[in-house]
Image (tube, rainbow, N blue to C red; front, top):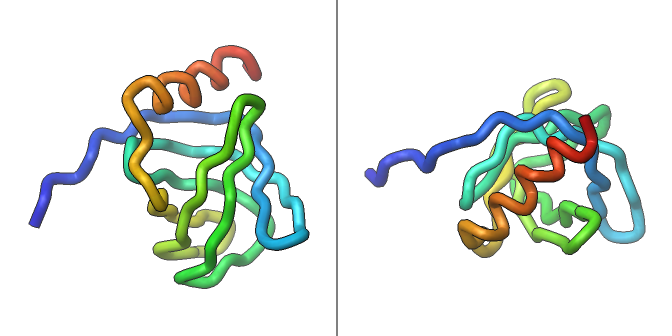
Length: 94
């Protein structure tokens, strides 16, 4: 079993795209391999979604969903630079 990747706290709004739908969400935490979002929409395990940021997108798969929280695994791990760009959004949206 591999060690869990370091997760960084976050608290900023993003747009989730699932097919033609655009949904609001808040990133709770993020790592290079995945993250946790909070949203009113109920996702199902295995759903494919896209996290939409001001500078790009990340495709992810739903690993679990419990009430308003949803755990995600990114299709491709973020680069360290990509992770820090996303984390810097927290400072901008505060």
